[in-house]
Amino acid sequence: MSVMHSSLAHFRPTGFDRMLAPIHRWVWRDSERRVQKLLRFGQTETDGGHDILRAAEMTSDPLLRRLYLKHAIDEYRHGELFRRRGTALLHTLPSKPEPAFQADWLAPGGHGLDDLHVEDESDNDLLAFLHLSEKAAASRFTVYRDVLRNDGPTCAVFEEILHDEVFHMSYTLTQLARVSPQHHRRHLWRARLGRLWKGYLRIATVLAGAMGTFFLIVQYFILLPPFVLLAKRAARREQPGWTPISADRNDSLDRQY
Ligand SMILES: [Fe+2]
Ligand SMILES: [Fe+2]
Image 1 (cartoon, rainbow, N blue to C red):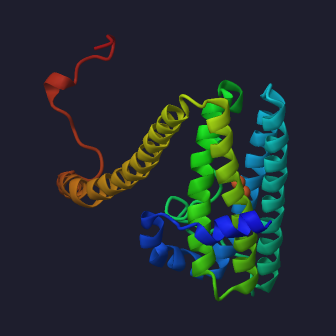
Image 2 (cartoon, rainbow, N blue to C red):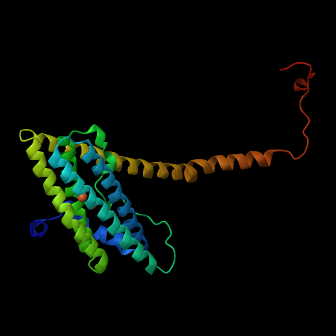
Image 3 (cartoon, helix red, strand yellow):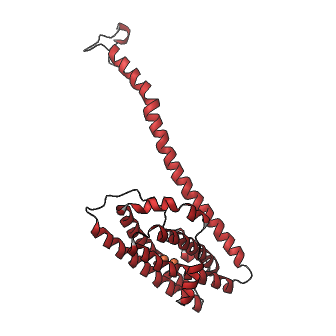
């Protein structure tokens, strides 16, 4: 435990996460959103546990199997801790929370394991992916812990989980260097590029959604009104009741056209 504490003491969130601290503070300030985020984080951690348990089944390396099993148990425990804290906070709310804007792309949780098909990955690629994901989770959880100082029990949950995430971050790197001593840097770069690409796709999806909404609003308020006016003008010109038609259009009805 002392090893984990000392590595945690030296762990610093990335500059990007520190820069976003005011936004994270705003995201976590709302107590309804806090409850919903904690419950969702609980689910994500448990799902991550399932995937790592699957990795333990798939690997042929006995040491990795043991470490993956410990890792999966940690993730299940994180899920439980988040859920328990979320439920305790839920009972303090005056009313049932409405679904609130979660800002998940600003303050995500978990390890991004949903992006991964454990069965298709080699131990090298999985370890590289896990190392980067755990590092990202440790960085974000450090900031979340810091912005939640005024909520002691939630802050303590992040503090406790952070110890494990820092351990996950370091064991995955050590094991990657063991199983692939020559190429571990290449695996890390490949995993980095994969994460960058998925990050780009996530942002592009959010932007595409926002642009779609914007253009629909523009169409509704700018393009449609002239047609409404034209339709109203045409309706005013229309004579009420039956209108006689001209003789040349008034042929016999014994043919189709
Ligand atoms: Fe975790
Ligand atoms: Fe983890």
